[in-house]
Amino acid sequence: MKVTFKIWKQDKPETKGALKTYEVSGLTEDMSFLEALDHLNEELVLKDEAVIAYEYDCREGICGQCGVFINGRAHGPHDNMTTCQLHMRSFKDGDTIVVEPWRAASFPIIKDLIVDRSSFDRIIEQGAYITAKTGTAPEANAILIPKEISDQAMDAAACIGCGACVATCKNSSAALFTSAKINHLNKLPQGKAEEHQRVKEMTYQMKEEGFGSCTFTGACEVECPEGISITNIAEMNARNFKAKLFG
Image 1 (cartoon, rainbow, N blue to C red):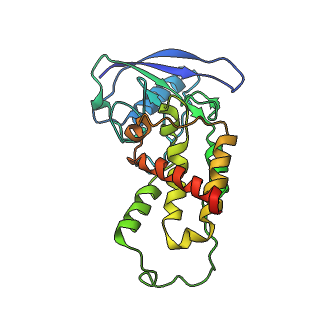
Image 2 (cartoon, helix red, strand yellow):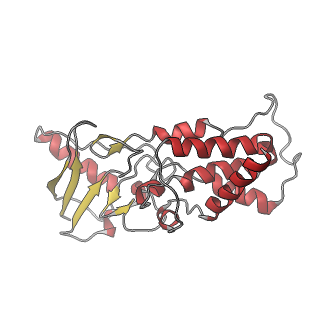
Image 3 (cartoon, helix red, strand yellow):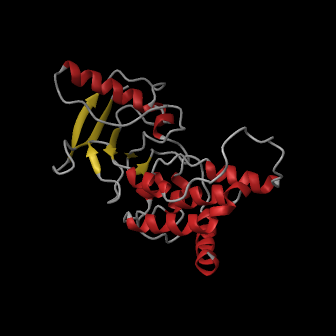
């Protein structure tokens, strides 16, 4: 299998980047997309050329580090999938594949396909935790939580923080990410003590980081590897209004 990669190359944050073309052969349909990039990098090393810088960790679709734009879509051509879960069988022999980093002012480029997502960390620091006494873990069934509520909390907790929602949003909004982190804890009894403070401080930090406003186009939900629902955003907005009244 032979493809043409057009990959964004940018040495430093302050330098100008551009797409560079690479002809790559010897690929198989069973290779993952990241394995194909590994194959390309091995060829570049043998040619004594600069390799492509990109992020990854788990390669199992659970860490969110691998996210890139592939032919204009976050994580590639399929809905609800991470880049590391994508395989070369999703492309045809002879295809041209354009690979770019996340495009958002709040995700500045570090090098090539690597962006700085520490803005997400700063949002987390503003309230994605609970104040609970440490010690022996309580019996799992000691706190009664309706299954519907626990299911909703776990669905929100599934967010892996990859940033695809921001990258695919025309406004570069982080509303889906932030709402998932807020609702995960606010739905549970353990998170009730800080629920008003949490939503106010995390949404404030989201705006401070320069993310845009949500206009409910739904693109984020389609590209989210975990299928986080945009109903979380509506709930976050309602909680934020309530927090300003009673918090």
